[in-house]
Length: 336
Image 1 (cartoon, rainbow, N blue to C red):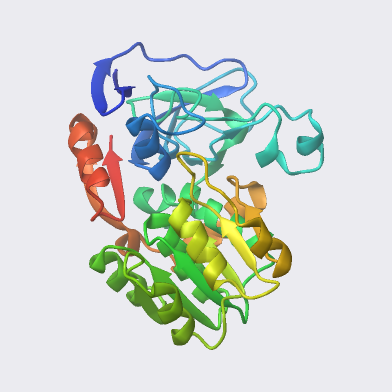
Image 2 (cartoon, rainbow, N blue to C red):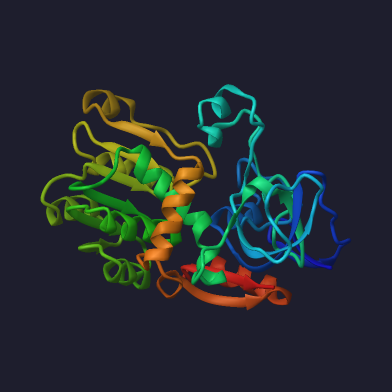
């Protein structure tokens, strides 16, 4: 079978591999649609803190069950499924608390194990969810990244009636905009260096959008909003974006860090203490977040046309990664 591998920094290859056989509690899935995630791009650059190369990427996956292990639960061959990518032990304190996204032994399909950018891959049966009727494969493959967003909005306490700022208008940032609007945010401001992404954020529900590289951006954002943001979502996680987040946040407000930093980022502790700002890390999701994300897809609040800007066949994976790296695309997907 064909399999995409991130071989070394900057090197995407398509190689031949053996078709995997599912273990006792696993199923084999033939992917149809696989999204390229920001984490995949970080991994390709060699700068992701938790992913070592080489790796077979692909955790935003929708496909069809192709083979079953003997203890694979109630899935059947031919079921159309989407992947919940976190692999957990089920025994540690965090799993027992229901917060299995914090599992002591957490691994992620396509990050620490072989992922779905292939003609077939295997994962535990309980990591798959049936795709609801009427949901396309392209939409189903958006549910994994969308689950991170629904998790983020849940753990900051919700955004109904809140003033929100979203730093970074990639796919996760734009999903934050759309979901915050669906959840009743009072006002939303966005930053991104690219004009095309700022314009897209306005079409998805933001009231205003700004270039973060311009001098005086923080002051402009604050002037555009009815008050300082109750919640700032940092979808970039660089030193400059975190400093902007602290410059924006309401006293007593929350900064939700969704982006994955590629290096050390310093927190201005005097501001955190004096203004009682909560910095909330965001790490993946749990089942209820996947369910909420699925509901948003089923309801039409989130659509493939709103986020998927390019699609490539698996054989053109190197070109797809080049397109995703270039920055103008929102979500690039591969079809298998």
